[in-house]
Length: 242
View: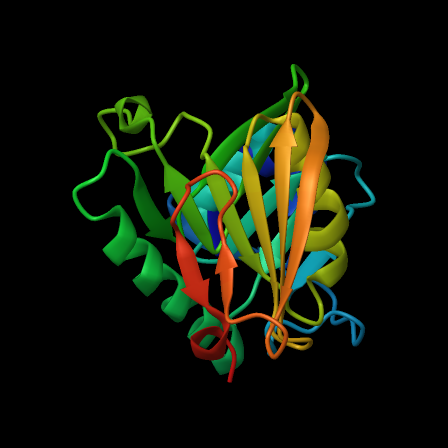
């Protein structure tokens, strides 16, 4: 919920309409008092109750990076921005968090006392896909090896070496297509796509805007999934999936 002076709403109505369209409530104030409320209309096709990431391409056009920053700083909700489209991140399922917890536990132990460090969401990663296309995402797990790119406010300004995304029913398309393309273009070296529905982990090796290699690890056919970038880093598939 955002509180905005009435003159600001009048002068920038299109911007705040974008925020309403991504399910953010706007309280209009005048002389320090709440005078009006702008609410999103109910849409039965967009539910934030279950795990997922609802996609919002606003009728007012693409959301800029600056508009996105204003939204997230004033909102209690979690959002991602990819190619000018906002995704509203809802609470994940037990199955999703179980996989994240098991993978991060393995990563934590393996990277202990090493240069690189694994972190879990929520943690914003800012990626520059193009000069006019700045994207912000919250991968389920990242491994960063450039901790010197953490600014004084604790904001990370680098590019993770490895990213893990655990697929959900409503995020499959985003994670499989849009995020793979984003990570490929922005310098991430390795992308783990974890699919609890099919007990499958697919690892993509990325370099110079290309997929240089890929490997699939299926529970039942394989005991472990092994990183291509970090030799010796393995995660047990039996522990990862319920």
